[in-house]
Image 1 (cartoon, one colour):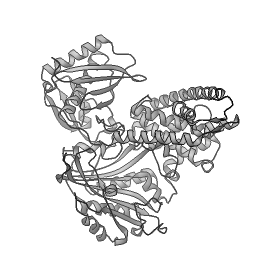
Image 2 (tube, rainbow, N blue to C red):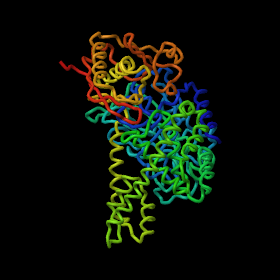
Image 3 (cartoon, helix red, strand yellow):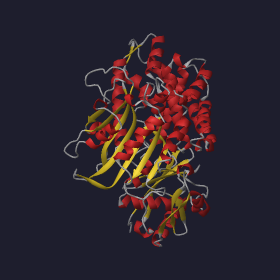
Image 4 (tube, rainbow, N blue to C red):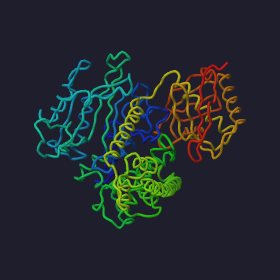
Length: 589
């Protein structure tokens, strides 16, 4: 089965059951400071899971592009991916457990054609906050699953949320493919990591709300949120050993074989790392992320540079990443047309970053030579120096060891590994801190700041350049951060004019009006949309007087006067051709 065949079959299955297909959202979350990238299909739907009405109704389905960055260093094994696609279906206060489980079982049988003997499912075991989910178990039994195919686990395995300290949450049922091999132990089950069980699908039943005191109460609107990994499902359907042996990666790996003169079997790890990282990089560039020193731009830079190192390991010299990106654009544009739309930017950015790293690599080689010259009679390179080469110049330990051996030196690998592990732990801790929020903050403060970004966007076009568009946004309860395209610094005089323009709009107490309409009507109205591919057939358009008109799904005030005042804290460079403004709202008299 091909990837598009699976996407279409999934969508058609749920359309036939009253669901409306929505488009994949951008990989850049809209005004959510808790995540760097869209990490799951539910992420763009958070406001609607919290009770806001979705323009498309209460039954939705889609295929959503996602990026998760917590395990970049693990990519290259059989299972880890940075970029992946999530097939999802949702019920927003409509159907619940019975229908959700029935739909899942039917699709597994009629679309994926998985023998129910190869299925295993899990359910919540219960605790002091919520009872054992026997309802879910009985529903699975009604579809012919035996007791020995149903496993009960605690909150660690079978509970979703809340994403922050408070919010919607509830039990889930995870669906696994059992490959049929003998159990590794009497306790072997879906929570075991021996490889016998592969997770296919996760159905989350949001039925509780956790408050600040840790109390769980029933939700007024009960939702179903499901997610099936496209790559994993395709691997199972095609009986492939790993996701890298599915049709999704055939074109990329074929191009790498052509460029390197080697076969995938010769160095699977390098082929996998390059394939995953450049696929992810191509999608990120299409959604407006640019290589940078921090945030999402830093992740993008890291992906490109790690891929470059492994291209060298395959013997691919020179600048060739664009050729891989071209394969991604060609193979994915039917599902994600933004790739074709932004292909020139993708190719320019990825080539520039590849060339830049080649220069960095040469600097690293010079630093290695200096390091060796400082060793004197010592023949052991300490872990601190070796890690510096890795952290600063992107040198993998394998390259450093090879260079050292050529000159008769040894590398303190244990010391390096200790430092590397500490680095990984700190990175994961930072990532977990970034991802733990998950739900958009709809507080009064962030609502004001969200509205202020609309005014800032309009002011920049009115005062600085009419061709300015938003390239990123991050809002906390304390301030807004707004990225936009501009190849020069915003002058102090322009900053003053922008502040006055926005403060005049605030003093005028202009109404903020929301209208629902088709995407085509929104374009005719002149509404600005940052990423046109992310919108569904019906959209929300927010107008502020006659000075701003934007497609948006976030929270807004009802009148500009609620902002009280606007002040720019800082204007700076965010990346090549991208400027950044940080600002606050409030009473500054």
